[in-house]
Length: 283
Length: 283
Image (cartoon, rainbow over all chains, first blue to last red):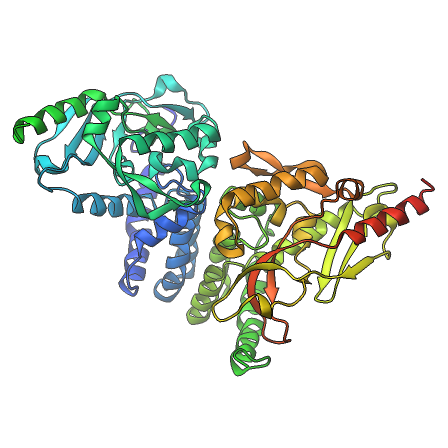
């Protein structure tokens, strides 16, 4: 296997992340006033990121906010240089904090009585699952995950792709990622398609969302807010499912990411959820 | 005067730049393999910069390239933190290197026998001057500079604006800045107008340029190259002068920048140059 699970290289990097990167970030964040992730995402969306697969600008803003703190708190200058190089060179270094921020935003919308807004979308490589605000904490709707279609890293192809996997669709659930592609035309070099397709992806998502973000705006659409709050009723009525802009994992465990592309959840999830909603609320 | 020339604050900052920032940058660059400015500009144009008034992404890429080097070479951690904070917080920190890169590019096009390409545009707050590739090293064409129209920092207005000043129009001469506004729709928050105006600025510049850049492309225009090489003949034939996207200085010396906006050179410069060209080449 070309890139094996638990290879020496992978283990070495994980240990470095644990021992050096983790310590350095923890020390830097301890002397910070926190990172305003909503402001970071908003600025990155004005710099050609959509916040899911393209986080080049966001990762550099993250470096900008952290670098002076790391300079003050990490004592070993070689370690400091490595940490800064890693955060700066990894165009997805801010993705995990972005996902956590999106999770906090969508959790705030969860549990609203009578709400048909989708507050969770997640995939585990086998099934795709959603939760709905007005349907409680524990009620998941699941169906087999689709296989994303996209562009592949050198040496890999569509035949290597695993069904949709990962927690990162929380970005689309919060109104960025695939929903904000209009502001990130350069992403097509990574996920395929044309800048016009990226624009159309966002325009389509306005059809199935409840509102437009006050905080996340897109200059190329005259600073219109991103389509936010997937509404179950609109999805089912129009038969338009959310667009997710995602990494593609190899179908063999341990190989890791082999590409990036686009995928949608099965429509059945939303149909099932709407039926459950009608039942719960006696509609 | 609100912001005086030679105020304590200004002097303190200049001394810091000389003693701390300058030393730190020099030490970092000494252990680098150089900064590939063309690659930096190309990437920044995919991140919503146009490279003249909007250099947010370019300045962060600059920080990303320098931070690990500064970590290795600047020994005082407080100074290191200050330098990183300054480079990261100043959204124009890379503008001077960008200008130097554009100067190197346009100088390479200067002195080509029979060429009608404009290779220098510069302003000194009184006059606007241009040089033309085929008209030699020393022949400048000058006329009174226009006053830029734009948006002003808090407390200042159009009435404070000085006639066009500075060397930064070398960016437009090299095919970025005002010529690449289509890729930087968010710049309208800084210079005024709408994203559509920004798009139109670039489209208009294709009318008066000789070619499209192979290196600087714009995702929003399907990765079309920026309009490059202002052609004297086209400017005069169409009566369309170059668009410059520039900082605006206060008319009283020492106050400094008070806004940003748009300006064009007087058409007379190009008419005079074309006459001189016809005379030199007996056309």
